[in-house]
Image 1: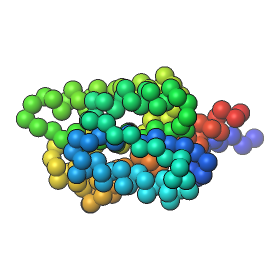
Image 2: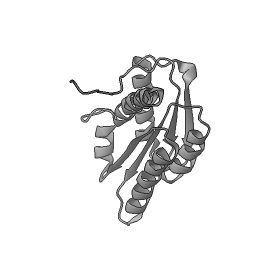
Image 3: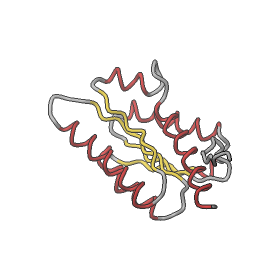
Length: 158
């Protein structure tokens, strides 16, 4: 007897997404936002089904993601920011707490939260991951959100 396979797909028609993007390191984050919007458009998401929320930095992502997920108005939340290592341990705290907070929100609310937070050692690495040499991680995060939104929809309809 064959086994059952459940997996998401990359069709965002009829789905609603919130994108949270930080203003800090905006030269990078605006590119990530462009990539995320491109992914949603390519997969069929209507412009009116996308909400973009700007926050000061990565630290603020979890509280806004929690609020958006709690509204139950979105099939997925996409968090975009860039934390670039400096000369102090600030990087470790901000990146770690943003990651932990976003993961907890997804687990607690059941709303997929895609992690599009760059954590790099240099500005050049961030530029590479925001549309240069290494693709666009904003695009990748949005595709993850679409796939997970579809997967959750299937699991809940069973």
